[in-house]
Image (cartoon, rainbow, N blue to C red):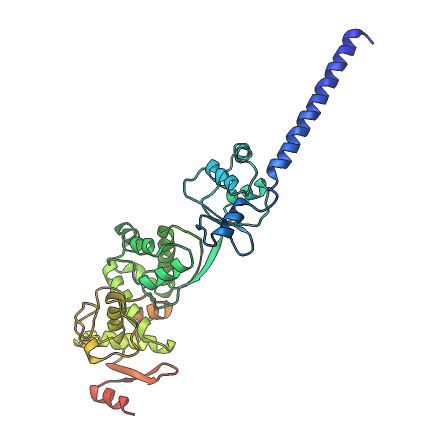
Length: 358
């Protein structure tokens, strides 16, 4: 074999050997830095000293990582936090993976089973596989009560929720006639991410309201915002008054009849709203005469017409009743069966009083 050829083969062998060595080093380094650290993490040790860590990064009862990626936070920032917490070996390897993949991590709150490799963690964050919290908002709750449920569930801060629900931007977005979204956030079961922006929570609930309203009362799309507001107010009163589904439309008919003949609505539910939501008092077991005389625009015992705004979030039954009341000449109703919540309906005050002494 000529000498130049032997030299070429030797050089090739050297390059191949170097290539194998470099590839081995790269592979070994990748496997090492990608693998989770051994032993308890710094986060676990810190949490043992402080059982109530901030929600932005903590371990749940099963040892899984609960990680919040803040809006606008960079991948480098997340990597730095993960390394400091002892969840990953090296933030620079994390940054290299970010550059290679080109995929952006998404804001949200995530639950990641540990131990986990950097590739596994990144796949969760880039796919946006957030924790979803199941939250049920019962019918008939107020904005304040709804805010408390969402706050306790970790979905959004109560103060933020109430501020957004009263913001002009949100009211204009849904063409709401009133001053807040009271009555326009549909009571339902929702699945929200943890630490979800209040704007998105309110928008989702309001969007659900108008979607369900379109099914219950398609004609609602053709009335003015003010008229819709009046219907929602009536629906909210009916929601807080009825207990038996088939009585809702008849109750609405009674209230509309009172308005037609020039009577006050005299809804006990409006008095309770004043006491609990405006005066901040506990829910009363019963109402006394002095309660009925409270001077407040929402008290329909002392004011004529509808209250200025809804007093609760009405469900489908109450909305349907407000749009399709049963036409009646009844003017009064009172509980006849406290267990089932049924009422007796009467036309005159004498009949109403007589029904109360049976």
